[in-house]
Length: 339
Image (tube, rainbow, N blue to C red; front, side, top):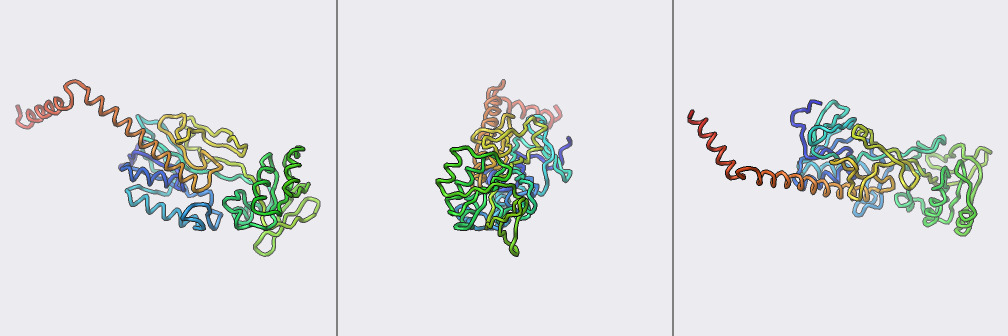
């Protein structure tokens, strides 16, 4: 792949969300050359506000990203609009191609492109996602506190989700929908916490103006609700990694897939890191940002180790650095004087 002029960086960051921008900020402050390729698919785009981020609680997601881009640019980082579509090993680094046609090269690669939340197939659900169709009580629970909340059961996570939302309201209803049957222990837990259980498949949402008012069962019965919690399936934006042999695997939570990595985001492929929801679909915005900073620190340390190894080899080479420099001076002198 031919690399564009000026297209060489210490690190290319794939994804311009909280994790990617946090990593780029740290790397820029470490005096590394960084390119952030932002595909423009933030997970929390449907939400009007983000929550649980100290000093940024209630901030619109786009304002948060705008501030992050400015901070990255202030340290020399480059943020471009473009989806990274492929990455391949090239020499001691990686050649990355964007959907804009741009081709760049980096010594290290960090993928923080996030995930898509794959929702249950219920009419109207996607249109209300991030508004009154929710999944994370830590992100949205306060806004629907003391209101009637339904839990749409599609898999084994529903009981845990119902017990979680019970912290925010005593008006929780578990809708069995297409989920597995309840065990005796689960039924006992729900009953002990006052969580109602309604059998039957949900066929659609009921609206009052521009607000959710309930769900309709296939029997025609309507269950009044103010919010509906679902547990989506995480689909990582990780196609760029497939050419490097990194493929998504099931996440331990049972809620979709992720790219496996260690605590610092280091993957099984040398030189490749991941951060944010592509590594942990359960991470909130502040945790995604923290994982980006952690990965950046590990990447910078890895680059320093490589540079140190090279310096040691050069120091131990025949003649040593000083002798090599004198030899170069003699050669230049000979050429300069035509001798």
